Length: 469
Picture 1 (cartoon, rainbow, N blue to C red):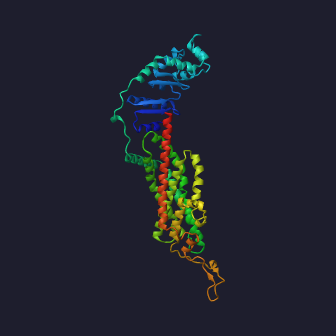
Picture 2: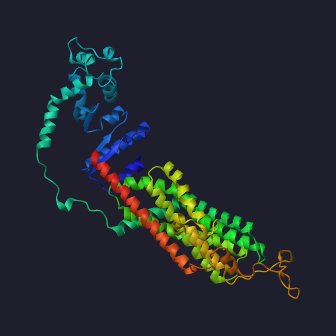
Picture 3: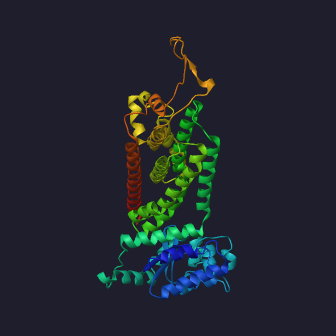
């Protein structure tokens, strides 16, 4: 509770609205919170709070009291005068009783103990309220009271207004991004478990894939292993989208509350999130690729490893941006988790591994252009299969009866990586550089769409909130 109040005070508001700031706190802590709020009010701020079961000491800390019942005002005025006011209506507060409990238990609600605790005459207003609409009569009594006339007169008087120099201006975008970045970094430092989990995930997944395809070799049987491992790597980085869904849903709750208070803009939040996540979204795929590459036994070329690392980084960031975009589309996490699989899985199916891209129906062909797995798998394959020479073991040679007896009647089915690319229809149509460029384009597209959806949601909620004001 105190932390939440502190967050509200960050913007130094002139009016502070609090909803039951003492709920769930023990007596001492509750009193401490309200006493601190009273001290803040004495510095010139206006503090408006609903209160839940206040003790007598807490009740008397309030300057003014507004009592509502069934949508009607039954009292508005100084808190210390409320007991006398209801006493005049025939509801005197017993000695040593908590005035707040008296209001709820005896005045607003007849709990059966009213007659025994309050001694009034037969013709009193309290007896009349027992027999009729008590809340309606209390509201009518307030409308006829001097308190209401006094407050209406105060409201009718024109105020002094607020000078332009007194209007607080929101910090610039640079200041907002800097402050949010510092907060994000501090959150990572204070709660390192999440980062450790991502590190462990990258390391363990890299080791699992590396051990499954360890020392893959260059024989014919290695073709299936190479293709399968490259698709599995592409799919694994793409699955980062699922990990973002729950985390972003939690961040969105805080973001919604803070933007409603005008602390920062949607653009500042989104830019900060993108920038602060880039370092570990680049580091972890490079680390994972470093674990897998040489253990699996891909081509021993530095430039190939560099291209693998770049492809992995782009693929993971595309998955991350796609996950944020999907999470931004839905306000309920349960709906998000239900909607994500049917949106993400087709992007994996049309990657060129499960189905040849030439065999995709025309009316579904467009899906492959939205698939980061399609472009990353194509880039991985073109990098690994280029200049790859394959060999045959004795049991892998194929017989060719049509050859003349003077020529060898056995041959090796696949001698070059280019043959694998041709068999999967990956040899033409798009170069490796174009595939990497498409990954970059998808990353920026998913990032931009996520920002647009989040901005639209904020505006819709602001309009809805304005209607209720």
